[in-house]
Amino acid sequence: MQIIWRIASAALFLSLLATPVVLVAQGCEEQDGNADSSVPNPDVGAARACGDVGLYNWAASVQQVAGLGDAGEMSTLFGVWGTSEKAVWAVGTHGTVLHYDGAQWIRQQSPTTQTLTSVWGTTEKDVWAVGYGGTVIHYDGTSWKDHSPPLAVFHTADGGPPTGDAATQILRNLWGVWVTGKVSTEALYAVGDNGTVIYFDGILKLWSDKIPVTRAGVVVKVQDQLTGVWGTGANRIFIVGNFGTILEGSKAGLAVQDSQGVTKDLNAVWGRNNNDVYAVGTSGTILHRNSSGWKDISSGAPKQVLRGVWGPSNNSSYTFVIGWDGTLLRMRGGPGFSEDAEFDPYYCIIPGRRLEAIWGTLVPITMFDAGTVTPVVGEAGPPDMSPVDLGIPQVPLVWVVGASGMVVVGP
Image (cartoon, rainbow, N blue to C red):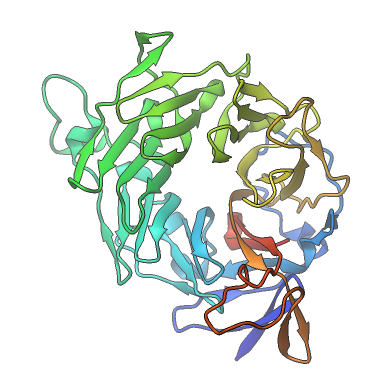
């Protein structure tokens, strides 16, 4: 048995799996009656009908992944990351780990039943996920294994880490993970409750939480929930959290940044380089960092809970932002942002659906004609030439995941 999954103008055929992972194609207009009414939504903006996002049609690629949890209920997916359009991971409740291989989603065996909140890696054989209760798991290309840090990493009192039931009370939830390395993990940063920032040295195989935080040169204790982390290298990371908290630095030390008076919770951070970084949060909050520091550019954004941000590396003039109530935005502007960000006049809102995370990659433009794939630009070259070598334009292909097993692929 097969079902058809449309991604842009392509048709991919997905087989049902022994472990039930089913993709059900749904247009936006079909989902009004399936809203997750149990999810609180304090930031409700003016919902616009689903449609084109600029030249891109998201409505044709809204999917639902079913049969993930106990008794077949759908898991909420909180994190997504990949290495290419043929290697994408999504994680969520019940310890759910899904892998997309370019043709189908497969549920991988997970070593935990804890909710997983974030996933990142370096290669297809080096993927990490974090979650509730200090959970950290690692995929080596064959299987997932528990790699949670010892209790001492979460404990800072002089008396030493507690034991028994008391020990579980210090295992803080982790909300974000970011990893760097050329062929395997060189450095891992994870962030979570009560200002938690933990670091894993992939070379020495050691965990540490001894990262000093300063404000204006004075050591301070950050106790806000930290929700997102991203970096350009082991020695330059960006962390965001509740009440407009922004930290920058490395394992050697983090510094509290000026968030320009923003006190809304920040939920995610991502960038193209040190001087083109975005942070998004509640009530439509969007901050951007360039060489002059952080700036609030959110005046034109819908007042929604924004949960993720990503943009193509080959075009810094637009960036995608996603959030609750099915919010899918294409934000226009650039690293300079002399004015606030602008948004395409049409964006998709899927009523009641929480979108939680976004990741994307660049793929060559292709045309589908009578079952053949023909480059739009460039002649066929030697077998070892890549689409980039042939001069074929590349466009973003994006995965967005969320509540009730929702997966949106586009543009």
